[in-house]
Picture 1: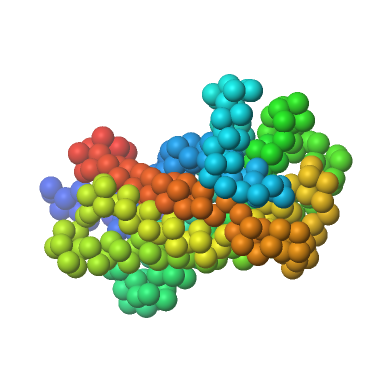
Picture 2 (picture 1 turned 180 degrees about the vertical axis):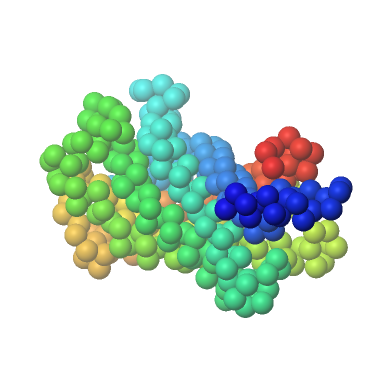
Length: 326
């Protein structure tokens, strides 16, 4: 092997140097950097968006898992009573669990979406371009299911912390330990089926709507990149459509996740739906809290998409300026 290298060196004419890296190595480094950028941007996007709407999200979950009638007035009263009784930061109770779940979830979802777009683009002959409608929808759905499958137990823990007093679960680890001991490890995946069924239309429609609006904007305005406020508006529309389409399944999964602390025995999707409809009706039961979601959802999704895109653009600029590793 050593003699082969010596022969190669000897064959070089004066002034020539050996290549530092092959094109495949360079492509591999570029791909790795792209994945790391997507993971970081997605994690930041999820953290910023969820923290911004955490008090509304917690209030929505409390109504979803109870039989109390929802109204904007009652939601405001609940937030105000929580503030008076436990202080301002109690409105973010469970947000630490949310961050533990949403940071890997958002990182995986956005990164997976970029990878699926590349794979489907190569397959359909649209590499580096906006995908056709069906692959565009498929990429979003696949990204959402990938992230949900890998982070589901954290979503279960977050739901439990949101609807229980501080004395019951002191921290995230305590939730895992108590559920495992008292209800079994299987409980950590209660509500998994409705989550998967719900995330397919939710993630699919959210990414599809956002990408479609950006495409139409570029064609009509002649600008390849929208302004930040336009991204927020596109994301808000995406969140509104995605969450409205999957909301009943969101209610079902919350009921199943919190059954162990609410005294119910929800076990199947259809059984849970039937019980909710019989006790509370279709609109007041399966769509309870939807009006709050129409406020919270568009804000969160708009912030999330905008933060991801802006962070990606910033990281690319920093790399071009030589501030990041090559």
